[in-house]
Length: 254
Image 1 (tube, helix red, strand yellow):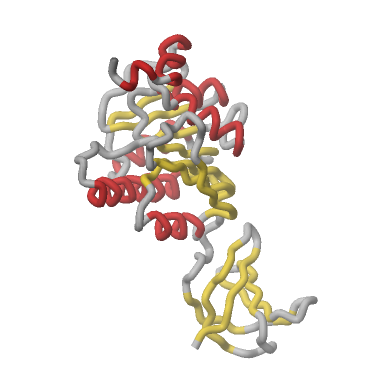
Image 2 (cartoon, rainbow, N blue to C red):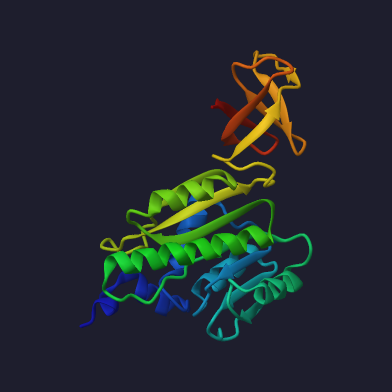
């Protein structure tokens, strides 16, 4: 008997009417991180065949949009788009459906077709996850949530560090519904930052004041940046170490 027919979550999905066993992965991710709440606007990238869309609509009951290169069979209460998430045309169609406020959550369980060459498949997974992240940044509202599947490998640390430049908190999680032998892992980014400054970016600033803790205070596009070891009026080059919703921390370089 094929492995998938012996799989507990495969059988459970068939019994409960879900289009894929992946539905339980989203349920478990949501139990842990509460990425989808009642009435949230949710966009699912690479959504076919629709298992995550079914769960997203059950959790939200609000606007849910699925996007894929393949046509997605209709799901009651869900809008679907056939298109490439890397194209501005597709992003425009998403925005038309979700409105100017943007999405509360962008999720992606997409994976490349496996070739059997692990280095190649890992690289393609990271490329797909990066495309999903870039799309999410165009449609998420400030403070929104992002969840994406990636394959673990040598490029994974760079990807998760990239995500950390855009969200207050980024974590990796492997739900129980993932097969034990699978290298997949989910990256969860919570509370999208304003994008005023990015982690690891370098800036030239002038210290405008000194804070209560003795740190210098500079501003980048109206965001307050705290810099240790500086004096009022000093001009310095800094690298951003950490970003919060309303302020950031920088370290002197050079």
